Length: 114
Length: 182
Image 1: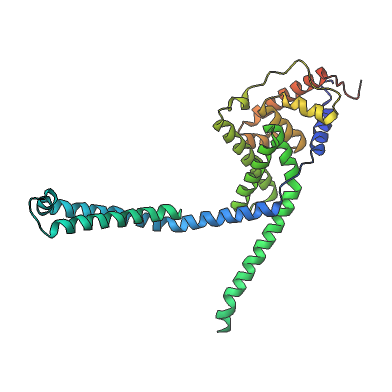
Image 2: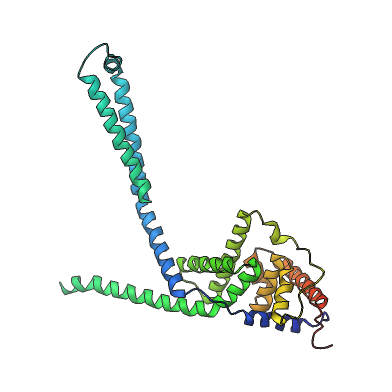
């Protein structure tokens, strides 16, 4: 094949492309897959502020709970060590457990949605 | 009252009609372009399954972006498909295949039909050379368009196309193909 024979090379390439007759995926399926992905992306975009708000709520709740525990540590400590029996100690422990459960649920909910 | 009741229905009908028209338009475009794009991806990846996956991914990305002219759509499709394939290679740490010229073997398969010989010749070129030859000869794209798709300067495309063609011709000669003039 000479260097001037670019036309022939061109026809060989075109012939090779013409001979390629694959079993192609259905365009309808590709279209609907794209629509579903598009809708999913739109949903995620819409829900993003809500997810951010939930995360902010979890953070604030955790900070408030921590602050409350620190502020009342003096009263809670005797109950925890068992030297003094008071209703405040068990109440604090139950509240802390309840809040932890609630925070866990709040934190888990956005993650499960997205 | 009538207007209140019919307005959402009308809007919904229009949206459905628009979607149906878009789908029909997409399917027509797909029929026109998919076979050749699949060939390009097959030649580039050397694997039918990869070509099909990348083809679907490229069309899905194209549908997700806003409407554009057919010429731009085709360029977008090739650019996207090439980039998806590059990303896959990068992930598989085979990026070097893109720019390195694979070592041609001493013999090229013969007597297996013209197209198969041509495919075998292309398989012995680098991925970049395969891409430029396909885009230049099958899709008949300009050097500027090829450069945009492959992210290479127009002047470099000219050189790459020339070298790729020369390499392919040498391999064809080695395979015993002499052309119609001899």
